[in-house]
Image 1 (cartoon, rainbow, N blue to C red):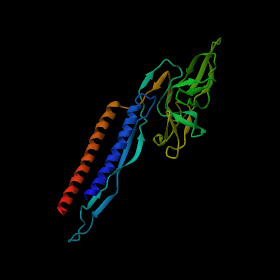
Image 2: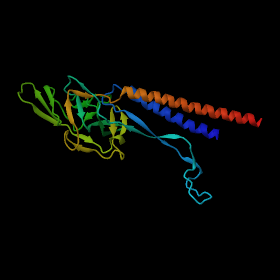
Image 3: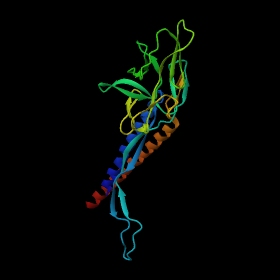
Length: 268
């Protein structure tokens, strides 16, 4: 029986090690634009039923309890927290923050093919052609494409995503594009690709497209950025809890090992 106890405690060590990795990733991305923290979900494993509850006793009455012993824990899923992050005001007119639900659509070269992916990060800039692109390591282009003329002196982006510019010699702003966004029924089901990007799948459902401020999609705030939603205090508390749980499981293994040593001495 002590051997099973060692195996059970080992599943706890494995689970806490995974949780530690998730906490470490959250803390590492505390300054990543629009980063969304993750949490692990755990579930207990199968049970050995030594005596089934509900069996009949000598009086033909059902037993209220049985004997069931679990064999450990496993990681069932990781869940992304899409709670709104805090706001940072900037002087960059191409910095955009989504206030509410929704994602920007960007075009990127992922896994050998060009495809539309999604992001909460709004740190946009212009590439050499004047197209709005995400300020990440791959420069993903905003979709639909919006081109800002080189002679533009001012850029205005409304809450509803209308992009207007004032060019040299002009007295009125002219529209150059409309930002279209997407939302998902289950955003936690999106696949995380890194580079501040997500990709939809069967778990998230198909994208529901619309303009900012319509169809349940949030509005845009120009010259603002959404920061990471990682709560340092909460992560540190979870880190301490994880350390304590790891220590307890390791002590269970030591206790099981000592029990086996006693059994071996009895045989001698």
